[in-house]
Length: 460
Image (tube, rainbow, N blue to C red):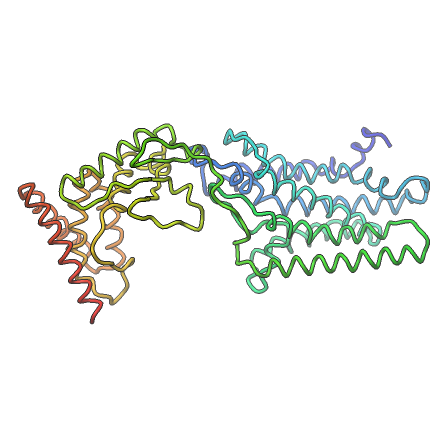
């Protein structure tokens, strides 16, 4: 049968409006429901992350559509007695010829969203970005084998839709598993999302690939033509090997946490400028064109704080937090991690936000404060600490974002948030009216008082 005839008779073409409609709906609606187009293109843009996001909705559709179509084609091979009519041709060749359009449909369900996303974000694909796509394309071939075999054993009119629904339901439901956790990682629908600068580890991709492909190879072994004794030996060995591989994959994946398969970080390219501080921003973070301006703002803010009497050390390096990965490295007096791309980007707060980030990282106290307000915990220190910080924020012209942050924090804790905020603002305002030399003394006294109060509260 030539290609034109095959395409005219294959259900992959008949059903094209359905699966093309699924691609269109989920890409243009679901994929942009949480993040509008404007936010997507504003960055940060990382090819592996964008490919992963594009594929996340389509794994399950590709596998379900493939097995449903393959069952139908397998049933047609049985009905027409094709294998018996062409004993001189390999059964694998006959199956491959029949399933080629089916596999093509499954591949298009995966490839089209990826291509559309890369065009939308204007990113070039990389081998690491395309790795999960290639994994899923191989798994599609495995589901085609399952479907063809099932079509030979069952009535295709019933088993084709049932197989598609069953695969869709089983794989979609794996995201709800927490004990055991391995189905989430072995189903072929990657459970681990990627952050900027991250790539999937080889194990994250091999586990689902081998878990699905191994039984498909075992099923394919039943089509081997040889002597009866050797045929059963081949089938038995393939079955045992498939079970062993699947058990090994499940064992490996059971040691992973939910949505936390192996990934590697730090792959994003950075552009740096200057020294002491050397400031680095992500190349595709969306704001690298403002690198010199960002560095100038950091230097200006630190210098302004120091001139006002705040003890701030000029860091050796200031790096974009996008480059930090999910296992965040902690900032130190010499190395800062600031959200440079996010704040300097089109959707960030601009240079005001950069100054605010410098304030939050650079201005420290000689004691430690609770990271969050807890109900019933002493909060006597809050007014003094926040008044000192508001004064420092005013020095670097970052008082508006600081007040907005504290206003939100107070509202969820204090019964009188407006009064607390008014008291903080009043104390900082009074300090700003003092002579310049006196303001620095006031700041250090306010720091010391806040530390005394928090220590007294901890000792209660």
